[in-house]
Image (cartoon, rainbow, N blue to C red):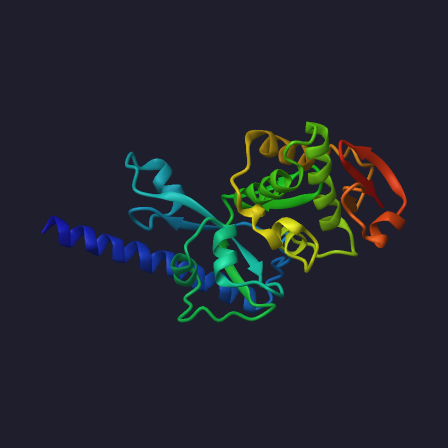
Length: 246
């Protein structure tokens, strides 16, 4: 009997959460004016937990029967997949499909998906990233600048952020990191190494607005690179073995 009650309760939670997702997507499709840009996400409340109880009631009732869940809308970008979107927001593919009532993994550019907002944060430098995206930034810093001075690690993070903010590059972190031939660690696999704490600290410092490069969009090792394009660009600063250029 207890097991049956528990199963019924889980069904109620799932149905309640799906209902919120459906209503949110319907609200969007009716042109309610919700911002769909990945960098301008507008929070909407949804209920999750053991029982679908209104937040106001849950505050007054002395039982931990529900938790407030905040969701937002993500607009599918070129190159996106359910796997990447789910990973970005700390979900499994199955959870993302369930949240959006999807019966397959097929998505299209411009499609709007409900995603959780509790892992997303706006940073002073002017970008909004999820916790996983901050980790990806640290991974690239670690792959490109491990062994470099700490300020050089911050500088690499700043270049990545500068690209996100520049009209010359994609406006999402994943778009910048995975742009064709942009970063060698993507090609050789070193991007997927676990970053150290120095790289994580450098990522946060860059996100908080510290840019030792003065707005650079490129960096390279002049002793190792024979790329004429990189050598022809005006240098802004050299930190460690990297030259940063505009």
